[in-house]
Image 1 (tube, rainbow, N blue to C red):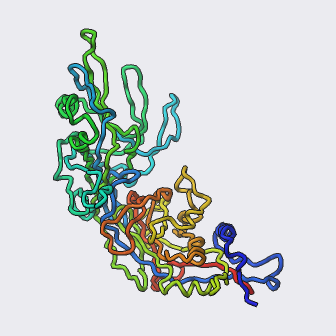
Image 2: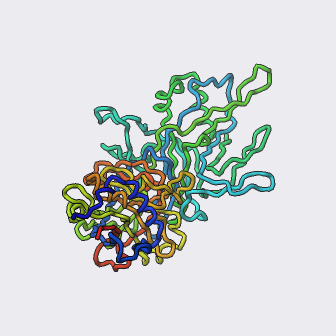
Image 3: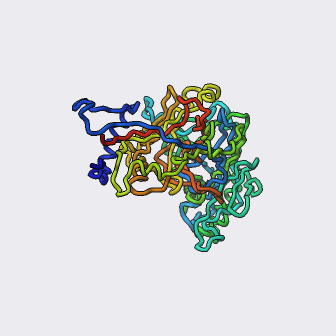
Length: 531
């Protein structure tokens, strides 16, 4: 009599439940029956390693607009080298066709762009104390920060497409200038400079709250890049550009405004090889440029305080300059690479070919010609180790504590089935989210596990053909939006956008046979078959 698992074929919930309980066992031990005894069971559990090939892919020309947050600053990765990130952003006013009153006079202009931060305590006066999130590098080293008027127009639609679809912009990170690619040409923002509006030669990121003083009160705001301009000579630009234009067409609607004032260029420059790089929350309602002015009152000799506010709700691009020490090798797609280079920003990723010898032989082993299951998959996972030599020489023990390896389906540019069904997903703490499908880093061994149980079941049961997995570094596995790759010439047409805003990099042991067996990247499969 043919023995199979036909009765279980459609029981996907059973697969997931069984896989989950086995996944909870850190070492994935093979489980025998303690109830019936080994000799009395009508099934047996088995384990095998499947041949795979993992290789590198250098990432060039990555989409740099439409990101969830934006990087600014200088970061020197100990293994890869220096990256400098700047921001070019459109701004829009809180109101159009403003009425600035009679004889308006500017008092000050306040820049306020918040960092990502968390309240950790309160002082004796009840004021919040903060810690900064998403800050990288050496915060004791300063950077040079300049803010210019940007004269390059960031258009919304791509005129080179038939349907006038959204315009995407792409990194040009190998350039020595802050530049980007539009799909048809390169744009160097240093060639489109307007007036310099602010310069801080020795800027350092700070977790201190910002004191906000008004005529009636003093409050404390969350940590931010906050700078107040009061010098009359510096205020002339703001008066002529905005206040003096109150009755003109340029401030009357969004289209006219964006073409008239094309935004700001926040330019970061290195003072030393080291520096700090941080994520800015430009989507926050507190990310503003506030023009404080007064206008004449109907009461003689009195003036009324008023404000005109700009926010960062337009197009934002995040150009970077890479000065890397590492040359990503030409991939060995046949035998696999010795080392896998995962580097955020416009860096590099790894591709894992799960079936380098073809998928059909695997399907034939687990599924009969009649569509009956011959074996039941209990658990499949990738086991990945960081390169200890690189780790010891370049990083301290906490360097990668908060980084994750994110795996995605490169054929469909989407999450894996295991990620979709991960019951540990949460939106509060990304570090502890999806830890079944994407394990946290083992702080002792530097090991990661990427669970692919449901992915393999889909290949068998649903005849799925997505047999290659992409691996990238990420600081937020909850952020699954894709970033397009310009003019891709292979199967990787997009990457998770989270890896572009993840400055750090790591180096992993690859799948090549030269790698010692206990450190080699492996694909492990645990299954049950009838006796």
